[in-house]
Length: 289
Length: 159
Image (cartoon, rainbow over all chains, first blue to last red; front, side, top):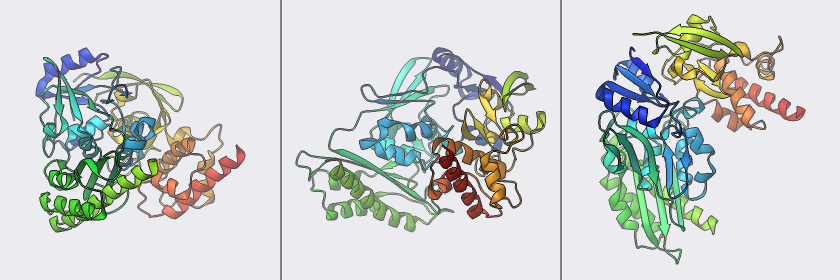
């Protein structure tokens, strides 16, 4: 590792440095991915721009939608009262990222930018239709998270652009969420498959109004199972409907076989975990009444 | 590449360090300051032997750049005993025979320290989850968990 190190003290200064260094620079937040990648030599920036002295980026802003700043750690998500209740899945995902030491410094925005198909927090953000807030020389732009993620480790972030936050609307009433992860052990593990679900019921409390089913580690990016969502929306949330959603998700996902699991096993996990996550949403909705 | 002059607060003492920006807190602790109680192993935040506390939170010092630690309080295993008296956690590890080869122990104790500060009445299951980021190659987890749980109970009784 060898680089020039910078510590901007304002957002404007950070954005300016990003624009100046372009592809030769990298922003540093928690560093749980970046430092390891630099040590392995898979990335070798000439300039590292640490964000830890930029004010405001560590905030979770829950006024009018929810904005999670670039320095918000997994630990902060776990501890924040804003993410109990309907946003519980976000906590469930944050609390299985690495061990305590990693969660104390690793950030949600870093999880997004690293763009691992097996990321834990990203599927939950996709169920929330999150947008990514990017700041560059030409000002700010907002990109749908689904369009931001294009492949393993690949995003539509432009060279030098700073992702300042992820943003999402508060889920409506009669909504619940759940996150489930399958790994070979329960901690410090990369997902074999993970599933995030978000369910909104209609006023009768029986029928699904809106569903989001998002899968991790079964496609080149974190991936919405649209067929499964279609199976659910407008239907009563019966055990049969949940089962059908699981089958649809298993049929439409595109897993590969690798060191962690075979494609076939991943499909079986999807078929099992999708109905289980949806059932958990329903249970939470019933308990919230 | 230019060197940086950093003032680091470690175990309550201020240290002036001149170092390249790519060096980690772990490098500075072990090489520049001779604080070798913090161990080095995987260098990828997987094993936890390099765990130190920054402002009371457990972190892997192998992936933290030294300049990121300026203005923050770093606690290493050398700073845990006070006036020659071991921390109750350290004493509990001795009492339970929780130390085998010893390499993982500084990290184990500091992870446990941060966790018990936050959750003094922790159960064994919670302790095990809190120590998930610390690996013991001797696989001595049972006695380690026993030691931490007993330290938690002792502290809870005193309060």
